[in-house]
Length: 624
Image (cartoon, rainbow, N blue to C red; front, side, top):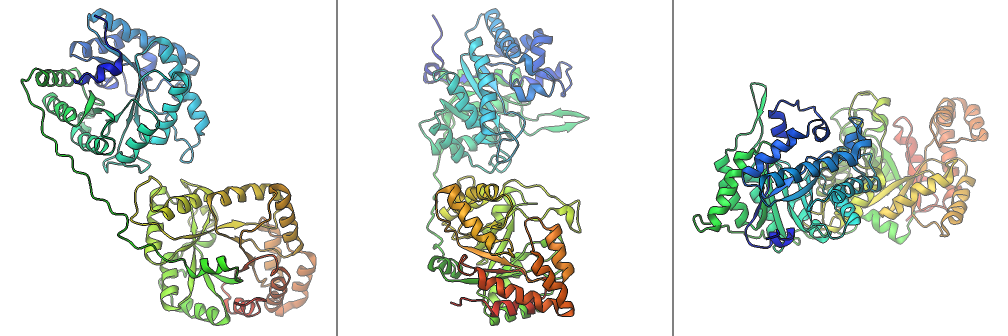
């Protein structure tokens, strides 16, 4: 009698028992862990055949091909990318031969793992390139005659979705099993919960969803339980590691016994698993125990455990949505807004800064900006400074929020902390590179670029979820700003970058200082030419009062994007000792000349001279 089509077999009521670890068995046969195990398909196919045969003898009904890393990205690390089709084809043929020689009916699953490098926005590989590489491997496996494709051990479920889409492009009919893997906190490495992963995979058309690797059977069981609760009609699959690995006398050992695996096979079945098997550390003994348990339950000799699945009560209305900030209301009503940047102190004392904040408030500043490690120099946390200003001075702040030096977990945690402290105006920027500061060897990496972070805040957190789609209790109410250089030499490039920030939902921009008003007119004209739209983003134009001729020359010659005309340089030179006040007069004139083009002023004091900044604030042309 011919074997049933794979999905019909899954729906027959008795779980399919899959095989266990391939790499574990190859390593135990003497191959170093650094070996390209996929290359063994060509170099020593009998080793692979022997592993398959052992699992078939143990009762496996589903064999995974030895192709987990046989994609172009991973094979290129071993100089084998030109042998991709040959390696994948050989793997299928070895499995087919082992099944034929065993005299058993079994299915062949084409194993496909992740690429080994992250895809964007977390890594260098574009989604299009990732899909192309997955397409190439899937095409080779399907052409060789696999019964099913098994996508396994994906820590980034967006990469898993790209792999699934690639398989569907090759063949819309081949069954696809999709396995995510989770860290010890039951989330993927990119922060997604089992419920989110399960829902997305089912929505994308996976035939079977599940989990492999991760921890041992206990962790897999409650992840599977969550998936079942989220998508109760989905076919499920479970292939755990044999517990958490331990190093014993230089060898990697897995503690879970075969009998323990057998017991959990019935737990997985009770939770709805249609496929049970093993991953790292599992052996033919583990699979044989699973086989015995499944068969005993089918024959009535063992009963399935009783599983009580309780849905968690999640309330998203426990936190009242926050009202718009005063700054947001000023932007919405078109009022001219003046903000002054303040640098946190290099100590834990805030008394002087608070006095300066009072001075600026009394001079007429509507908002105070708080920089985050300006010039990459160690300073007090801007969260503390902004909170103290708002609570003790009574002026709202704009919190500068650089992406540099933060991973995605810290970014989101910091945003939640800011919101809890009432800091809901944020200015998203890349931040200064650490190499220019006093800790040049400090972490300078980042997970997300400013435009993507703006989108995360506006389209996720302001809608009540984090980047992974998990509830944060209620929608946040951040007002989000971006950087803009209206005086850039390459306006088309600046407009292109701005387009990504606008698409992400930026509410306002803090502009780089411009010392020639005609440059703003040029920007506005070019923006309309390029986009076909009138520029309407509220801009608070940067105003940096010059302190001396040397200061002006430094800005002109060493700060990209700042151009100071000869007339202003000459005025600073002629002012002599009066140069700081001449700089104030220049700033006041610029405010008068540019007020009709922008929605406000972003005053940047030089050398901490808040007294001079207060004079500029007092002369702002439009008051509200």
